[in-house]
Picture 1: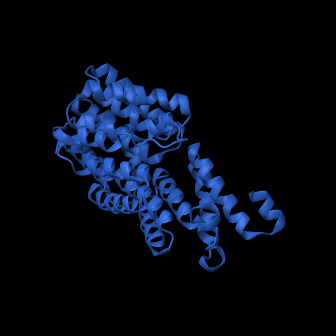
Picture 2: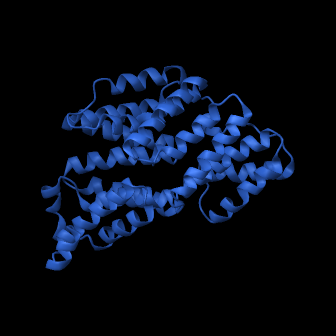
Picture 3: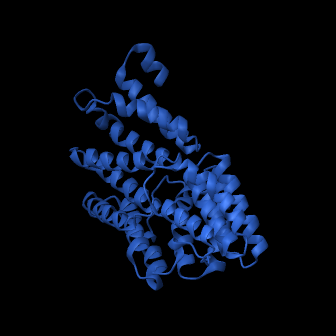
Length: 324
């Protein structure tokens, strides 16, 4: 489509071609290429010339490219830009008359804010998505939004039950069940860990890693590997698991996942009497993120580096897994 649009000098086809290429590259974890195509849409979109595309494709290309670029910027480690892009994307989606585009944007937005660990904001956006999905009678979006609200706000002892209840019977005809299960797996792994069910969390992560191999979607792989490592009882298995997660994040170029894996591994190293190794691990990744805002991952990594330098006792549990 992109080549056809360029050959015919049809800017609408070019726009749709770039949008499709952006989403395809992101599905392959090729974030830089995804970002380049998404930016081509973002910079050339004109609401007067292109507003009818939503009627043809079912979604607004600027919204789609905004979501794609926000996730790409995040994983590439450009935190401030990612946060701003998602905020502008949601504002754009809310300004459109097409409520289906707005519903899709809100679902992606709530997922984004959950991933960046802005849980209160994730809950607010998910609540907005839930209300709109209920109004539009979109059962999959409704179920996912309710699941995410439970993941963000339900009491720890009730969280798993509410999450499972939200998803009960929510599958959509034609939907790939393996892909759908992989999408929600990280939410359930985290909920299991927060409840102290480490063996169950490790099993859930292992099952989800099987889905990674089955679907070819590696976007959740680093998180699943580091979560499984966190749950291991044996220190040697933990050490190996964290190294595996770190190597995975580096192999697919996910800098934010590399930061998260580095700080989890460094926390483990510091708590087991290896502070010099922990500091050596953190130093280069923290230099890469100099000047970026103190989101949870960075604030914890910076605080951890200070604690390691001062010889303070290191809590082996990362802050996102401390029961609350």
